[in-house]
Image (cartoon, rainbow, N blue to C red):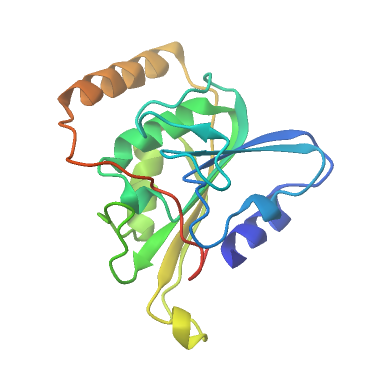
Length: 205
C-alpha cells in the first residue's frame, strides 16, 4: 500500500478527472481503492472472479473489455506474478491507456510462493525496463526494495515498482501489437482449473 500511495501523491494531482483501472483488484487482504479516493476520479476494479472490490469480471487476463485509449491511469499491484504469460497481459494493459496516460506497476522482487491460483514470476528493474521496451512505452521511474523491510512480518518480501508513460503510437505499431496479441492468444493452452489473480497487499505495495 505504501508504494502505491507514494506514486499517487507524486504523479496524480488531485481534483483532475481521471479514469483509473486496477487490474487484479480482488481484495484478498486489502485493496488500492482507498488510495484513489478523490471525488474527481473514477476507479474501476477488474479481476478474473467476482468478489470484493471487483467491478468488472474478466474472461481472460489477455483480453481486456476496455476500449483502446479509454483509461487515464492503469494500476496493477501484486498481480502480474500470477499471470502465466504476463507479457501478453502487459500489452493489453498498455493498449487501454490513453496517450500521455500512466501505468503504475508493482510486483514482487522476492518473497515466498503465494498461489492465486498460481505464482510464476519475480521481477527486477531490468525486467520492468524490458517490458517498457516490449510495449513501446516510456520508463519514467523504476525502483526495487533491495533491503529488507523493517517490519519482521514483511522482511521476506520486496517489490519492484514502475511508472510508465504511454506515448502516442503509430498506426503501424498498433497494428503490429494487435497481430502479436491475437496470434499469442491462439497459441496459449489453457491450464487446468481457474481462479482470480487478485493482489494481496498485506506485505507491501
